[in-house]
Every structure is written in structure tokens, then in C-alpha cells.
Image (cartoon, rainbow, N blue to C red; front, side, top):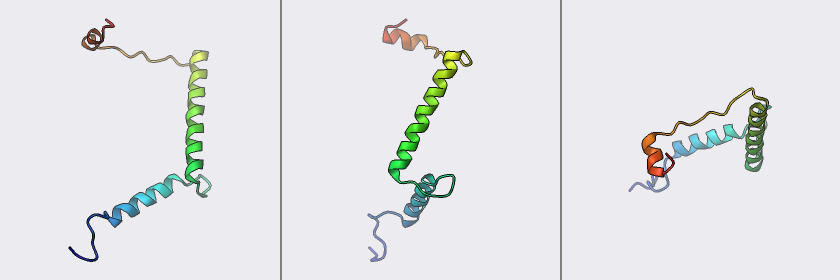
Length: 81
């Protein structure tokens, strides 16, 4: 084993790449960075907003819910057909 390379620590290039990706995800549109808590809060707010918008579209009749077709073999095995 070489003293400069420890196979149990991982690849430094991969860690640097992942760190850069994480920093990019935490960037706001204005260029400032968010904390992980702020990022999670923003993600939850976007999810809630999307659910609310979808609910409003269904309620107004603009959109219809998609029906999932059930395979006869799957339904019969579940006892629903």
C-alpha cells in the first residue's frame, strides 16, 4: 500500500465533484447560497405550492385526474377484479 493513497478513503475527484454539485444545488437565483435547512424549507414550499395548484386545476375542471389502468392479472391476484 502506498502512503499517499488509501483505498478506504475514496476518490478525491469524486468527492470534489459531489461537493461542487451540492454547492450548485444550494445556490439561489441571485447567486447567494442557502443553508441546508433553507434548501429543505424551499423544497417543501415548492412541493406544497405545486399540490395546491394541481388541486385548483382539478377543482376548476381545467385538468382531469389520470386514471391508472389495472392489468387484469394484477387485479385478480389482488382480489379487486
